[in-house]
Image (cartoon, rainbow, N blue to C red; front, side, top):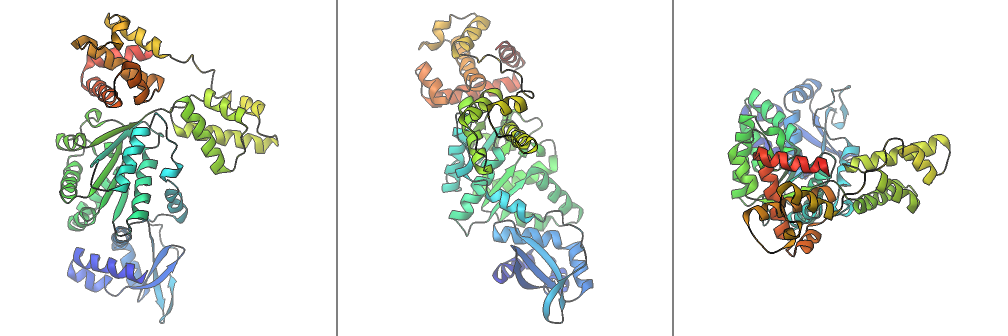
Length: 437
């Protein structure tokens, strides 16, 4: 840990005004680590309190950047050359990662990510980024709804890169925290430190990047950071709830940058993937779920997110504990069945194609033909989009159905997403078809 502190001091020396560094930082000493935290001692209580009030956030962020992982920084007062004594009840630091939180993030690995048709492309791209950061799929843009695994994939990249490339500086940060740190830097006239912190990163991972949209100064800073890192061959990966073109008020330069990289979607898990997610989550929680219970939950909980499945398991486990009953199909029906009505009839691929052909007045048999009339190509793309989004078929399965490869299907889905975002007529058409199905 002393080496870590020495490296952090070198960073702080270059980032802080010389008088501030000499007066307040140079006199700090690293005492050691305990429970994964770096303990730094000040010569007296006044010195410690001043550093806590004015420099702790900066010290903590610098240490995390140098270490490439979450590190809790403790400020203490030296006790006559002996072991430092912590000051009495300091305010809880805003950014100090709790040890339990750090452990939780470390558990978000590729090995614990359940892959299915809803996320296979995004997971494959994330793995490729983790194996060769900065060399392919840069930037990587992962989008999808809430609770579908975007953050898991981002943290899996961070954990894999840290394990494989220990010398690389990795920063995984939420967009809201990026905004808050920038606003704080502007207010304190510390933008130079802000620039140095974010522009020395080797792998920058930003979650929920849609939150910077509409914030002109933040987008400007992010774009500058983006350009500098990409020019230096550094890796950038972000997540969003929408594809770039559909994010309102996103600066055109950023949109262009995002669209110039790899865009991958995570969508609602299909039944088979729900089955595997439930089995995986139950095993990690130590729950012994009978196959019939997993089958029932996967069928009944038509989840729009992985969190819904986790919630169903929590309710089932709580019910078993509170009633003293074993987890069986009867308990699952009583506990979960009330929260989820009977699942609607599953939409078939044929029904999707019939609805599209009827809405666009096209012979349904032509959808799978080789003809490429403009109207027919559009209808085929809409059908592929709905088969992916509504039915949950994989890109490969849809491609096989239409005699195309998966890249053609991927292009079709992206084309409809883009047109739906900017064309009201396409938006109405697809919305009407989704309601009908």
